[in-house]
Length: 173
Image 1 (cartoon, one colour):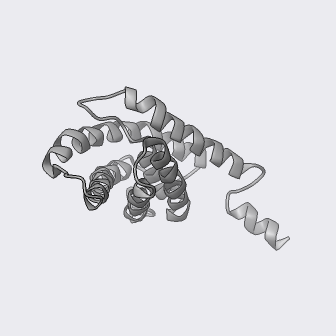
Image 2 (cartoon, rainbow, N blue to C red):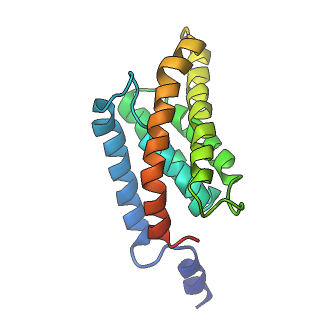
């Protein structure tokens, strides 16, 4: 009985884990197949990053951390980046976004917008740093201005759509 009760409290009831895995797979497919075709000023939105920030705010760091790890590995395999690059960047973002849980503005859109505004450059710079450590020459200013800044705008627009929907879905606050 105690095992059933703890499983029920974890949000993994009656197929919830399967729905979560299906949702993660769908997000990865959209991220790797569809979004790269929708470019704005040379960049595209990062759906997985936006989802990880939303999950950190709505479900806690642990859930977001798992999504960031598994989703990041899948993105790396699909994109050909060194394995673990995206996972590292997404997991770091989980802790940043987790700082916003339970704050005064948690019921407004201000908190997710601020978090994605901080998370997008952090995510991008971690990926650039791993590429530089790998031996690639990186134009930090050019990458920030021409890739990260437009991605920040797109991620902000995406979080304005996704956060309220996820908040309703999870029945949060």
